[in-house]
Length: 151
Image (cartoon, rainbow, N blue to C red; front, side):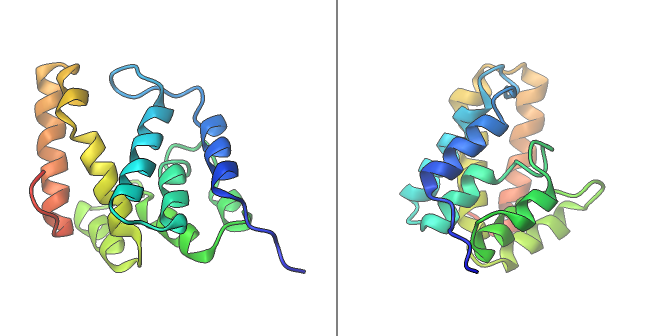
């Protein structure tokens, strides 16, 4: 029996529901970040599997959806692989995380969009100076590990 895949609209609705109670570091609804990453993937020429992964890129890491849910979900294997590649593991060195993203087909464009939104000066401007400096350095280091041009 063939499983009917979730549509992008269904994936977006699912992600919005799963992350509904979350806010970002500036206190904004977390779903705004997911929308921005999905839009960024689309603008970078990403396909529907990558856009689906953009909506779900933090779901397992943030414990709003389980890895078991993802494994069983009506998603393509590529979308699942991208989401898992973008899921940081506790204690994992940034180099290992970056290598997994670089070697998972389709994952780099999703992470590039994620980093671009995270490092958006307008988003960072509302944070305290210490947090802004720490995150700016963190995002620049990850861009370098991924072989992306400076933000």
